[in-house]
Image 1 (tube, rainbow, N blue to C red):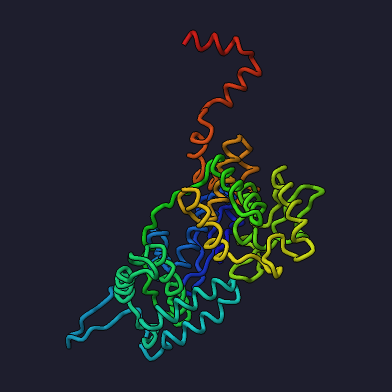
Image 2: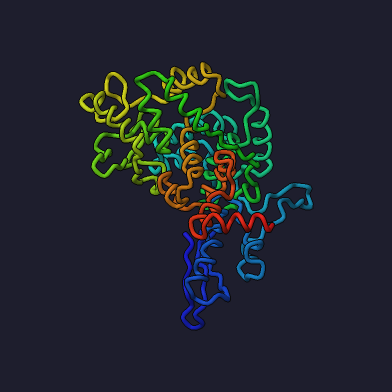
Length: 411
């Protein structure tokens, strides 16, 4: 892990990190100040990300560094006098284990960090995609050309249950464990990762599709009675699906009108929230407070979970989606979309109502407002239809209506 240190003699900052098992220290001309540390921290984050992804090029990052020559890429192939081809920078094949063996080692070491659902996804990709392609190859013999050919083949595979090929995001997800496996092998067995300079496929930005307030009212008024409280909470708290399904009564504080997001349910497994910042307290509006009070009468004595099935177990996402959500939208003539759009709807309604963006970010579990403005801001004019009205109200309340009227007349 990279760190930022200070050279005592000059009071300038140094980047200290490991690359391919070698400790590297790069001097900067920045003096040791909080501002410069923050500035350099962004560079360090990018450096670590590229090292983890196997795309780090030392000379491109530090072009004048004396260390760069240690990591310069060798010519990939040289033809000997006898016409044989030698592969520089790669150990003899016999010195590295088979891919299938090292992939299992890597999985056993890393899976302890993951959720059950992520373990299953990675395991499936290794067993069904990566091992059939590379399993019998020595891990040190896999080349950049092999990876690019594999990626090209994936782009021709038909997606399961769809009349189209695998999407770029899906291909990237399949290649991510391959990248990590080969980068880890390269670090352990001292050869250059074949993933050098292979970037992820470009992913098209996906627009969110929130519901209007009128559509929300129609959905809540029409949905089955036993799901009315459920969707009220989803639409007006911005909770993720797993957070709603993992909500327990012990995390509902009626006295302070707070919902404490502490656990989540994914694929039927109770687990930690998506990130540390997802651990948060959501303020209940009156609508949410009333919905939870009504729900309390039905499930408080039946289960620890606020929303549960008849046996007291947390709701199943696929069951809710296929048997309640999609049929309801079709019945109402609304475009079918994921229940996750309830979360996006809450964000746009809060923004449209003029709530403080920092407060909204906290309610959603975001650490900053950056994502809020990047993803949702364009929906605010469509919701209010009164751009600039907040500023106009400020002028009226401060200067009086006559002042603004006169100013408009002079214009």
